[in-house]
Image (cartoon, rainbow, N blue to C red; front, side, top):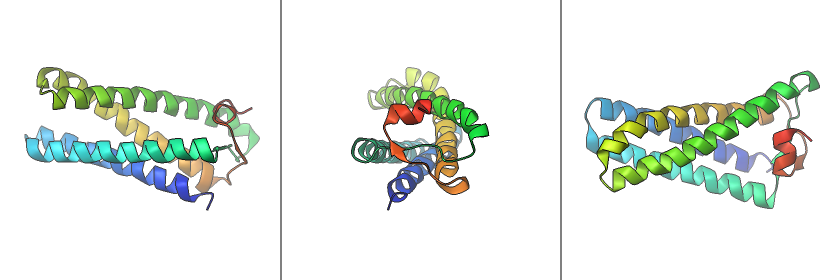
Length: 152
């Protein structure tokens, strides 16, 4: 049960990233309707990820890195990098979506490619964090989010 929510949230982020990639491909082929549908679904799956992640953090806590001590600092740096990417990507994604919904396509076209690349990196680093925490190494104990981020 302890791995169920992280598996679900990681699946949501992976699906979101895949949909963004397909959406980007669709717009490159000038398939606007397909692009719109794919990006809307990507946003839905990103939102599902966020809800699942925040719920787990609030009610259960986060998992400490359970791998070897000699790579713990590398993991912590990678995790902080992922968190920064996720925060920037999430905010940029919201701005990009807002421009699209407001039909401000001039601005949407400028920020969209950047948002997409950052979100794809977020998805990849998010799945990597999941693999490091639950698949490659055994998960550590559950604790508060700041303890996990800074390895306290």
